[in-house]
Length: 219
Image (cartoon, rainbow, N blue to C red; front, top):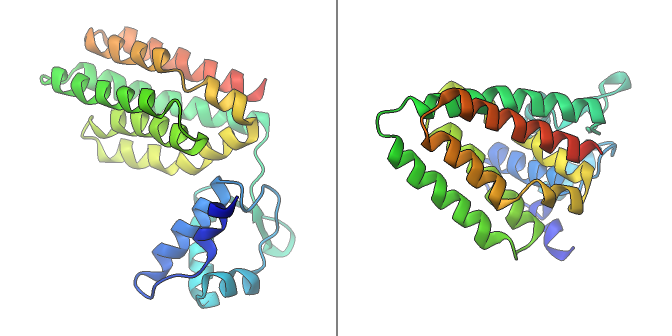
């Protein structure tokens, strides 16, 4: 894909570490840097036009995010997810997002929350005929919005720390399975459960959603 190489074509001088992080993160989660690929510092620093010191800082951050893994002698490679790891990721997602749903049920201005979540589902529907990347982004934005609307910054930060692994789990499964989890109807069900204000129902809906998503991805 011609567009896939763009993130590695060099960076502006401003905030080089952040730009390197973004470019590498995109290259990994898009599959440009494939799972299992060993990373060569000299090659990447030349491609990104940054110092090896700046590159190492970015690579350390990506390792902390779970996108890279260290092998013998500390050599880094793009992490390859197996079925157990995907189930673990979605189990943690279920815990975080069920907390988010419960919190949203308890908010006094819940109708504002519902309006925002419905708008996020509408964006998913609009992206249904778009590229896989657009569909993934709209799906993730729905779940990110749900966490953000709680006002719990720790919850949001915890969810965002999983985002790279979530993208990689979709890549692992492939197009057909990934798209199956992006059903607009299933996300309407989440919104409807939160709208009732019934925290138990909302929690149950989220857990079933995540259990089903994980099962699809590893099938």
